[in-house]
Image 1 (cartoon, rainbow, N blue to C red):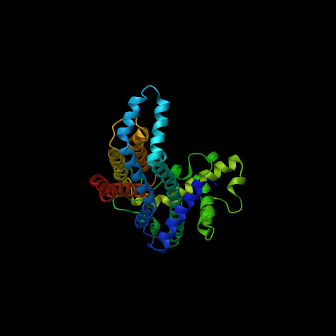
Image 2: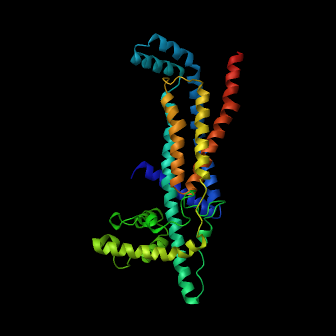
Image 3: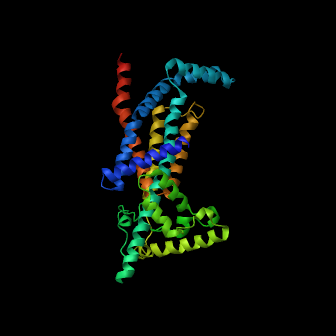
Length: 346
């Protein structure tokens, strides 16, 4: 297994343990506490980056001299600048590390929240199956799953759907299963992953298999025609289970694009402030292209990721981006400016 999978597993299991054992199943506070813990763990890297940027900023005049001296020899210019960085104890790699870590955690958290979303959707379906069975016996309307009701957050009706004005509150059958049987049901594969990740209590996921798949015949062993028939039956059963939820939120969409916009804004402000601290407008300067990627590409990526994935992930990414910005400003104001003043006064 890859390192990304282990990181994803650690994040998923950690957040779920925190939610179930410490924070009374509060999804928002679990995300908030997890984000703060992660940013505290990343603080040494933030400080190292700040020190590295300060050193590189001090080298800007010398870099300008090297540019004039070796304007016709780019290779020599780069070699001399690397030598200058080494002598000052600075490194271009140190400037790349925060972006590498940011991307690594970005994709790992996307995967972790996808697992968590699958788990919660499974619980909702199991609840609705039981509620519908009770309703058939009593003749009353089936109750809405308590797990589903807990997924509401402020303006977002379902935290396991995107904060997106074009997305329904309840995931439709095609999104839940996939559009064709030959790719195999997404939730069926996710069930297997979740059983692996939660070996101590796989019963709830096996209940899902009993809802959608024959107990005696595994989906993997069916031929193409049987798979197609079973797939259609599963989608019909799914639509039956979510009908009370769809009726409750008929005419509603799941959000207003607020979290994707906020995440994009905070990512841009963080990158802009970081670039501002470097005090250089030279597009050819080392690290300039990385700075452009951080300032323009990463915020755009953030917008589309938050628009496409769960609102739970968008909450995490918005909080993380905001904390990164605040940390960057605080490090600049309360640490490095003081160090610079002390050096200047000598």
